[in-house]
Image (cartoon, rainbow, N blue to C red; front, side, top):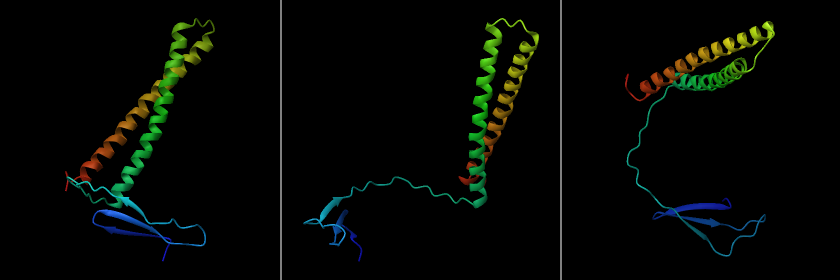
Length: 134
């Protein structure tokens, strides 16, 4: 017998603590009430291992893509504002800043497209799981 035993009687949970050598037992049993709420509906979906793997991989990729979307967009805005507001006399420095803006805009566009593809993959798998294609 363990130190704690649980009995369920008439909607209440009664917790009895037996004496042990490690800790002193309370003088009487503690009574904890459990409130039950009715469940309106319960939906159970069967998910295959392949569908679960698709959702897990797509969620990981979405997080990864979101990181690079933020990096690309913030760098493009930062360097673009610098180009627009600060007069740069050196042509090499201006070309470097302009190339950095273009590369970061391209990074933003590519990872945004990849993010939407991963989102669509999750949506298709979710519809298949919920029975739209079965």
